[in-house]
Amino acid sequence: MKKRNSEQANMKSRLIINPVSGTDSAPDHLQTINAALRAAFGEMDIVMTVGANDAAEAAEAAARAGVYDRLFVAGGDGTLNEVVNGVGRVAGAFERITFGLVPLGTGNDFASALGLPEEIEAAIEILLAGRTVLTDVGDLNNRRFVNVSAGGFIAEVSDAVNPQLKSVAGKLAYLVGGAQVLFDYEPVRADVRLVGDDGRAVERTLDVQMFAVCNSRMVGGGRLIAPHALIDDGLLDVCLVEAMPTLEFVGLLTSVSSGEHLADERVSYFRARQLELSFARTIKVNTDGEVLETDHCRYTLHPRAARFLAGDAPFAEQ
Image (tube, one colour):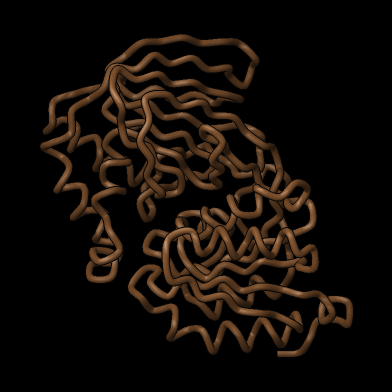
């Protein structure tokens, strides 16, 4: 591939690659990714992650060095989450750095939101075209996310879907993990306080089966949890699912793939600028699939804070 221009060729890039993303196929694609990006953008170094937080540390180091214009991430939503959080530790770094995502994960939900196909060479061609979009960045208790933060049943499934299961089952890992969790999970009492898109405050108390606070539309490898979400509209889309009998919940889950779950009266959907959730016990909550435990969630949003290379997808700013 030809270099786009001399200015791009002089820019320094870093590729952070997770060799165990998805079905452990990253090493098979490394030569293709490396050759394409170097031909287009010139100087680039490569960091291969070997453990937890390696991607965050590599991203933070690049941000602090001040000589990187691009960070390419070859991995899934979890690897990207680490990279975004690493860059976020450095003041002003989001303004300097453009992110490029090579979708090698199990779900690749944020890649879909960016208009990137799962076929690697096709995704790389889109990255090389150079179109960018400024995306919102969510914040849960000072941890950033770009796709979805979810709790209750969804987070329990995230915890059950370990790297070994992803390697063996691919996208089916979410179905296997869901089956493992389904009959054991107990709903939790929650106090909900949010500021809506119209600036009005809403307060509710309910028993929650699961919830999702969304920057993007999809979760769990293509489940349309927030059909109206846009990654650059300055709002969080909030989906709250109230407690219900297990078999009814199974029926509801089958409708999430198409977004038809919003028609259920036990599902509440809001668009919010900020949100607080207080729980009667400590529960699991994830950010882009990375699981933590807490009894209080405070969500805020950094509007249009991160610049991503992107293809054709629904964006607020066209």
